[in-house]
Image (cartoon, rainbow, N blue to C red; front, side, top):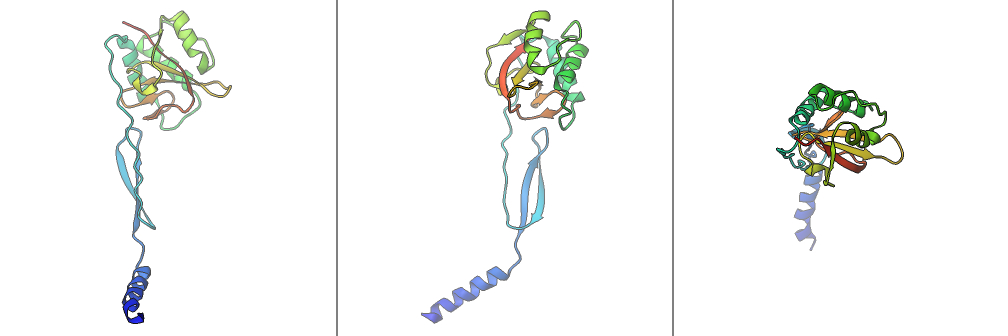
Length: 177
């Protein structure tokens, strides 16, 4: 019995003495392309699926699509806590609104866009199904909220991200052509 187990014990001891393989983790940048990062330790693979791409809707005002490109170009990699300011500037630069919106809080954006600038609330309840150029308004637990524009690659406000905001979606707003 011992003679049969001896080779197995020796093989297990030899495997335990070997150095551990390098660990590989895949990280995705803001546009979903991946890059490998190696570190010593056990091998592991982390996969994050890409979010669905945005659709173009011909009924959306072309100024909003231009605002989406402007917002994405002006956005940072991380938040500066000025989402509504950056969205207002993108809408104004693209010509989607006639004047600078006056509200201070992001959660009030939808109400002002519909009452003063001719936007309509779309019957979309999933941010990933929002067309390019639409403005998405979120409510957090009682704070200022969050607002972002749907872009081809994800979402943009003061920062760009392929993922939606974690807050509760209030509404998706757009100006129809």
